[in-house]
Image (tube, rainbow, N blue to C red; front, side):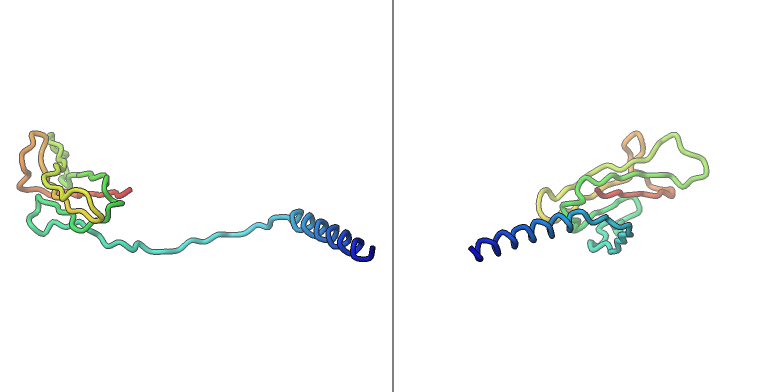
Length: 120
């Protein structure tokens, strides 16, 4: 009989403690994140000014958006854009080559441009 009372009392005490813990109010606080980009950049234009190569890019960055903006004081009628000319295919890392072309598809030989690559 004593063992039965102790078991019931212990069960009630555990139930009371769990409801008291659940009834605690949530305090206000601040969460701070810090970190660094761990993948090195993979874009280069070492071959020439109109060719941009991506070498050893991680598969997670495939599907990056590339935008071209002319630095000339007056915007040209021929809007520059990039065209993919080589792709190494599937794999953990990939290589791609782009060329800077005008709206007619001809290689741009001169000018100043800012190329922005935004990875997902």
